[in-house]
Length: 429
Image (cartoon, rainbow, N blue to C red; front, side, top):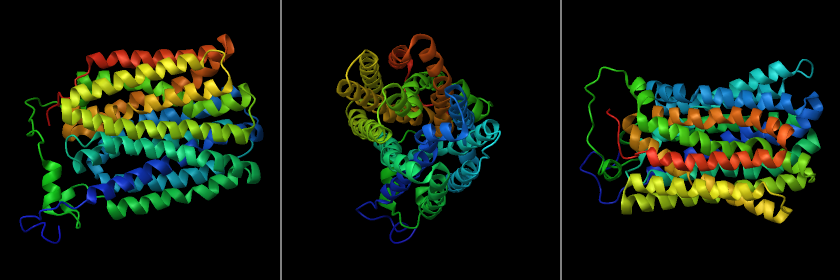
């Protein structure tokens, strides 16, 4: 550390943690620009590569399979390699794999595209377990939910901002040149992560002693485990982590309905013009951004007033119940205004629970917050493959109204599961 950090500290804490948060938000934003591109370009890619709905569903499922499988390993990788190094490496891979996607051959396309999308999912998988580890180390208790909420806000804005732009660019230039143009954003992210992030706040040259003390304030003492079981196995066996994972599985079924199918639903089922559908989709993701930010503020406020357990439980149960109710109404034969409003409310309410889920993962995991978040996010993204494959099957069998009503049921089940979760029950170090 520099300045007076090693001389007893200064009276005012530096704000380097907010600079770190800004980098996490940039990484989250760009990650979603580079992963959502296939969903946005889906109709054009399907026409260009002669893919049907089921085949395209396999392409979408390949991403979420890679993303889900590498969540927990991604958290372990961050602990082993260091958060700064791990963040930098995965961002480089985002750029390289986006370039490879643009080079998928036009003939015999399905298997190469599935393989590349699986690798894209694997490379993006560590971002939120790593983000959770950074937030646990850089922010004080009662200040975890807002950074988590803002990182979720950044991802939703990544989709909201990029969707109309990518739709326009794909229409004007084709999907391959667009993918080539956005790939360097991954290299930009890698540079920002290496320049700003540090694994330990005390090791950052711009942090003073007052900020280090602020971050460390009121933290519980380390809890040594009497078990010889490896930490990674204790994370996998932890009751609260498992229930949290189950709830996040259900909540993210709603998220992946928007991620995978809402743009397609507007264009192919409702018959909206693609540009109009792009703007309408953007509105849904802006609503989600509002929900993620609001959820972070409210959850931190409730944590300071009533404790972590009540704050996370109240936010998650209330948000998922509202999300399910709004999606249930959207599944009925309503007009476009009511449909758009219900979908926006559903996505906003679901995203308002992001901060509480991740704050709970930090509370339960402690110094193992990254792996705990990785396990939770495994469940939260394994459901992406379920959604990608289940929605077209239900839609073909029972219609799109039934497919959307199924999404409502998942949200309500996720709310009920929170009755069994104790976010303040920290696992041993």
